[in-house]
Length: 344
Image (cartoon, rainbow, N blue to C red; front, side, top):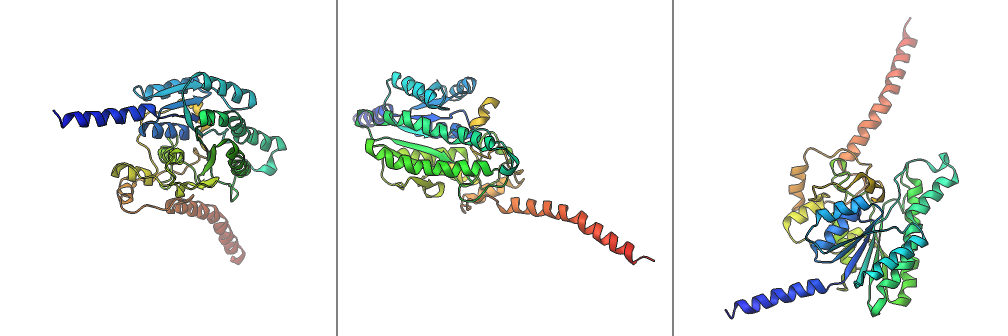
């Protein structure tokens, strides 16, 4: 009896600490990456306030976690007006907030900049960059309320350092987002809030593209875990404005989590509504078919953590095959012409 009482008290204390934890706001919660952030936050015991424009997607998300401390809020940060309305809605909830993860992104249109008018790039900036500014302007003050020290994390996609072929407009917007994060990082110091961008230099494997994703792409769940690691006030994470995904320390809780994280997959089986795909990370739908030897590679990942890259060896092999197929007809045509010239 005496031994059981302390154990029960410890469990109750742990539950009380979990209940007392401040909530994390996830913007773009119904997108491929947003769902990974929500799952990671709930798994860590964090209350989550999920925000998205897609009301049906939010209901689907709520149904996926029926017993979790998950609050859904239909809303948008497309402009200052939307950001202000969202801030008022969050304030009315009366819940302490010490973290925001912005996983918002526009449509994944493809095309060369030189083939489109200036409005093509302007639309990309309107969808991929300016919503982050609108959200930060109105949500950063919420993190500073009551003297709390909150963290605001932006999720940044690939292409910021080198042009992404066919997605040059996205590369420009991603590079601009990194600079925006650096500016906000400095300006938010005055209100005691930390702003950081989690920089991901490859596409992300989500529930929407899992069947065609490359093995070395990080999973949406692992992205969410690292975003949450930046919010935890343990002082062990990098403090700079732009933090590479690979430099965020996170220790999975089991061997299966290690394998899934290294292999770039998640364990979700439910799929969000199609309307939520516009908020996924850049390029998540542009993947090459996955290898049939996934099981063996996943087992090996338990021992050897693969390096993250845009083009794993299998993808390079597919690219070489495509190039050979493109070059072969020209070579055959030249060979035939030479034979005709040599004929009497």
